[in-house]
Image (cartoon, rainbow, N blue to C red):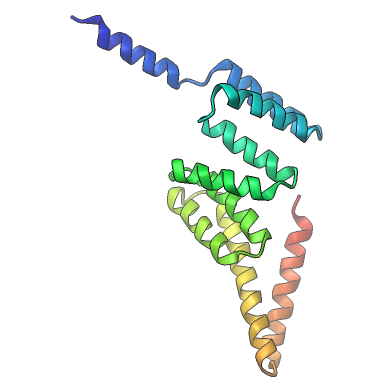
Length: 174
């Protein structure tokens, strides 16, 4: 029996396991971020990425931190890149959609969320975010209708209730 295939398989399996340094970097970055030290958390992730530039979890965390720092264009580019490379992951699509919706790109956000839900139909955050996008799309359509003609009482009521619901939801978000 040739031990070479067994050794190659063992090496491949070991390389697929998360390294302690990577796990420590993620944990350290998350602790820093939770304590309000987001820039330091990003530096920790960037340092870990220098050793593992293709690591999806580190890159995803980097995107979250970029978003938290208000560097939304960079976060959008990173989440798009992650999705291009690993389209089966729902979380980059979900986070991408949230950023796109915040920019008013509701159709693009809807498409991203539907993709996230195709990847994982049980993804609660994506499902909730899709509902929020549908509500924003409905408000947009009703506003356009109300501006084009004299709105009737039913349309005014729908628009009022939808805006009230959207404001309530926005106030409850972290």
